[in-house]
Length: 294
Image (cartoon, rainbow, N blue to C red):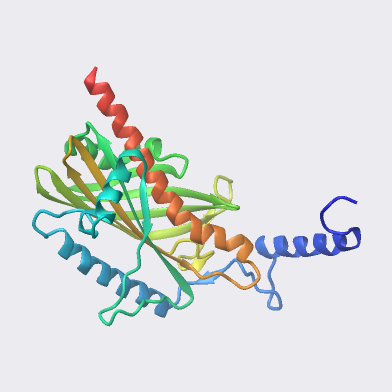
């Protein structure tokens, strides 16, 4: 007999698989709660808000340093040079973690905080070209597909933008989200700009694309994305533009017994989404640079 489960175990494996999918499909009762549901608790949100406050305080200090703007530029040598060099041939990615004033980690009870930084260099680009793309929200569905299913600029006044995205995230399971974001840009000079994007509403969509699609109650859903902030820095130099993004998101924790299903989604998606965003940004800007150079 070839490798695999012995024949006498197959019925039990099939039963276990059937039970898992019954739970996932929401067949719940008072005796069998739906393990795919999660509630955003006040203490979870409070911890995330403290994390954001500490992170933004650090960012505010970094962007006012004389002669140093990017996070990568503040790294010790030789890591700084290595990181900046990697943005020219690849996409730099690293996990970050913010600590409180005492140096302790900020844990979110019943939740997980995901904090990533990524950076890319776009040769030949100008700051104006990059900002034009970043602020062209009605066409982000074309630039950042398939994750951004629909995009729309709701309101624009000065350097403030209110936007809508329908997001689709897939990793073993597929989750669709209706999201609204407030984005504020902070132009600093002719070659430096930064922005702050805060998701003000995130609603998970059930039966997306079907006649009966509907939003689940916010904060009482699958818990795959409860909060999301991103902090962008744009610097034009070295005959191109460096684009650097910090992404901070809040999800549910991983339920016992379903780590095989939930863990890949909540741990992999934040990094992969940022990687996609930076890669798509570079591809779109390079196409514009090539078109203007003809």
